[in-house]
Length: 584
Image (cartoon, rainbow, N blue to C red; front, side, top):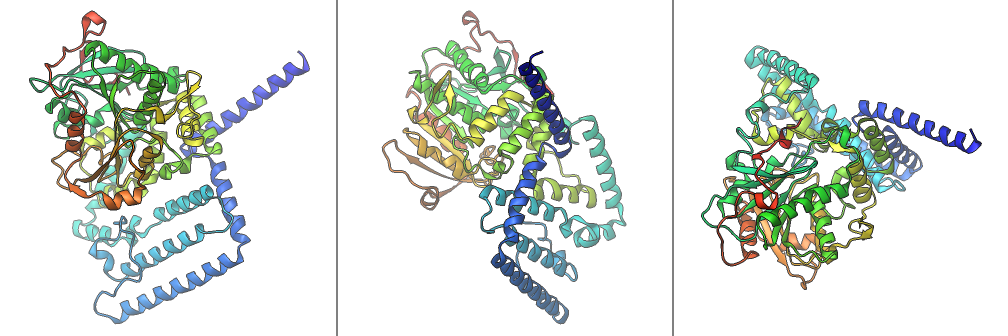
């Protein structure tokens, strides 16, 4: 063996050992890279140590907060009425909303915690010299630790739990223990949460009638039966994210966007993605474009010939649709009548707190984990999303289930959320690197078939939806679409978050939205000006969207198309919801 061959073998061995070590650690940390966390805290700690002015400021703030707390304690001791708090929780913080928290000594405990939380925010932000990304990581990690030790999480310091204990004679703790054991057993065996069995695809959710009319190794294409005697001539294709199962858009009949569309005279096609296994680890983003979006368009063209298509993408499906639409525009393919993006981003520079988990160190760590598994497991992805809203998705749920003894009723959306999927290693690596880390799509470097694509080539009218409280795709990030396209863009801002804001049926009395159109030759309006200009409307945005689709369709309605087209090679294969959605 030559020296060169020995070096190559040694390099390969060293890389294998490193990747195996990273993968082993990642299974313990849930995919979070300790190196990324350590470098962020080192950056913050060293700069804080060499910032005497910041240290003086923090010392003064600590003394002031201690004084405020002491004054508040004095008012509590001398007043018969509930004293005015010295600090209020953030508007989204509901942990101390119960009146029991205003009674002594729990009012002093929660005020002390909130003051401490505010001080740590001051300590972890505004340190001169710390990189913005590292500052965000340190502030986020510190917030997670504080959320963990919140007085609301412990029996002795939570008056609401203590009151329930006295009222029930301690039965809530027994019921909480039973809930814990049941949840632990289901988690250990890989079973779904309690109550999810009441929402099975094809039985209680995903029940809109339809047929699978095409299948390849990556997708099943569902065509839904018409619900009206005539339909709009242009069909609708929906491309959901492959991180989710498609039936979030076809939940219970009263919450089904698919049913809403068919009842308003649209022919609807839905992509149902394969739940990949280790054998699918080499599937790429371009495979998802070719075998997903483009294959679905070809099938629809065979079933509904000579008609353009209203293409719709949700979350990652919206990003993929943007890539496909830009590629089609570059290549002179004009089959799209319009493009709709539900919480779909094309610029990832300000993609919210999810970017905390995106750095070279973190991406390489995840790549090593996926190298050992072939996929990124759904549980490993769910952990990151739960951390973004830990108060609501982790600690509040634990308090209610295990300390209060209350089992929150399962809903169709909650059951869907528990029915997660996996991500192929190559595709997810490309997605994290090319889109999140390097932001290639918005900066004109994203290549398809060896040539770059440009979003500015898209000329089909666009309808984009953002949601007010989206932690995954912040609406201001979604709004950046205006900067990259030369088409007419109608932007809607819906109430709710990433899922609830999109699944917003007209029956929801709390729903509201804003909507404005920017024409192709109109001036750019920044998001803050847009927010101040767009009037708020009560109700769901679904009706506004279907009206928009109808206005961008042919004026004359036509007879519904056949279900599939056997002569063209697209016969009905089975009833909806198909087989891929059943994969675990």
